[in-house]
Image (cartoon, rainbow, N blue to C red):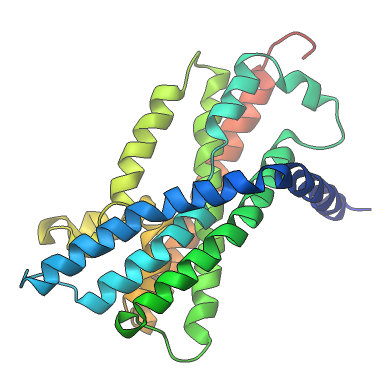
Length: 270
C-alpha cells in the first residue's frame, strides 16, 4: 500500500472519530455559528444604510449584500486554529509521542479541522439560507453552475493556504519560546487584508496593486468576489493562478521550515 492511500485511510478514520467526539458539543456549534454570523450581518446593515442614504461607494447594494451574506460561510470554511496547539505541542515536548506513531501529527490537526467544519456547516448553512431569503431581492446569483464550481475550487485552495500559513507560523516554535505574538499579529493583519472586516473593493485606489496581489486576499475575499464581484474570465484565471502559486509557495516554505525543525527538535523521548 502506497503512502498516499495509507494516509488517506488514516485521515478518514481519524476524521470520523473526531466527528463522533465533537458531536457531543453540537449545541455549542450552533451558538458559535450564531456569533460568527452576527458581525457580517451588522456590517451588511450598516453598509446598506450608507448606500440608501446616498453614500458614493465604488460598489452597489447587490455586491455588498452578496458579499456579507457569503462572508460568514467563507471565513468558517477557510479558517484554521492549529497554530497555538501545534506550537504548544512542540514547546512542551508533546510532539515526541507522535513521532513514534504510524500517523503524522499534522494528520491529526487536519482531521480535527475537517470534522469541526463539517459540524459547523450544519449549524451555519441554515442561518445563511435564512439571510439569503430575507435579502433575496438584492442578492447576485450567478447563472449556470460554472462560477459555483470555480468558487468551490477557490474555497478549497483558500482553506489549504490558511492551514499552510498556520503550519509555517507554528513551526517557528522549534526555535522560539512563544509564537503567540506572531499568531496574533497575523490574525489582526489578515482580518483587514483578507476582506473579513471591510470588502477590499472599498480600499483606496492608491493601495489597489498591493491589495489585489497580497496573499491574504486569496484566503477570504477572492472566493467571495467570484460570486459577488462578477470577475471576468481573465480575472478569474489570473486569480486562481495567484491563489495556486501562494499555496505552492507557502507549502514549500512550510515544508522546509517543518523539516528543519524536526531535525533540530530535542525533547524528552525525542
